[in-house]
Image (cartoon, rainbow over all chains, first blue to last red; front, top):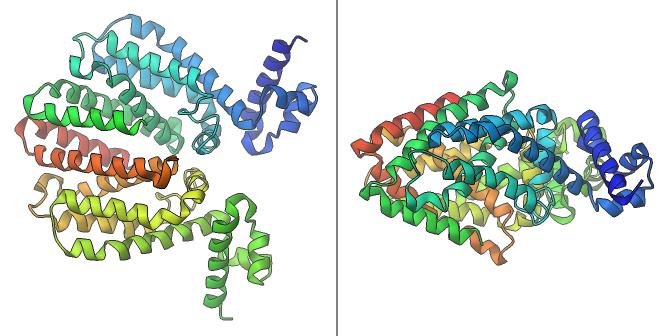
Length: 216
Length: 216
């Protein structure tokens, strides 16, 4: 196998084992054995299990991008676009629900490669935030100009919050998360419209300023 | 030792080991050995490490309650009271910052006893939400009546969000989290005041309805 072939083989073996056996039981040694490579070779491509979880995050994000292409091309207002994108995220993550808590457990560790905020996740993060930029850019009627720059990142934080809720959602088919999305989207869309009101403009400015400053 | 004495001894040994060696290295066997009891005996009082992390959560919450007693008795408006409470939470959690990521890692697992939403955490949760009920109840000028019932729980979710940010905050002394609190509190206090405006009343009602429905 070429280097790229080996890397891809180790990667797909790891993702399968994560799905089948969970995170804890899937050691680097087991991944290497099942992929038929030396453990050192597996480590050469993926310095830690966190990096392999990051691959899973990337795969799900690519699936998310594929699922939203059609609804986003169809136009629509901010609410309907956001609603489609959040449901598509839940669809893309769907088969990983059992793994979800382990995923969050790994991703939430400060310094983890799998963190959505990490340097290693940059490309994946750009896939996800790219979707939300598209949501905002293509909305008709247009999003108020004062919000247009920062709203995609805010909506991405909303998406991460929805996923955190989803991981903990034990209702059948994660119905409560679907209801949360359906209930929250109209409220968010209304707040975006209301942000134009003079009485709210100061609060909006201040909120955006705070977000920019804590982003570090 | 009496049963209560043994339980307390196992508990304090575990908390010390968590602080000194971190979560992973502190096994139930090590806790039992260091406490001078049989491993089975340690398990009798605490069925899992998650239950011991829950004890840590409880200890920090008691510390939080002690720290806010004086500022809350002093009166003040909603913003100043909330600001004091959030900073006191960061003070109470302070020495556990290094352990913070492990704490969140454990607490965030669905079904974890250490989860702030678990049945096992109920008493601790009531300590924390009790503080926020006090914040709202004692505020002058008073909080708009439409919000008075639900605001404490909303502010508790804000507190959990701040702690999630804090765990990931690598700035010296977690300065960025302090700045987040100082920036977010006036915005939240202003939103509470604005919630009285007729143009926002519908959105407020809808948001509270959604929160009640997803609480499950």
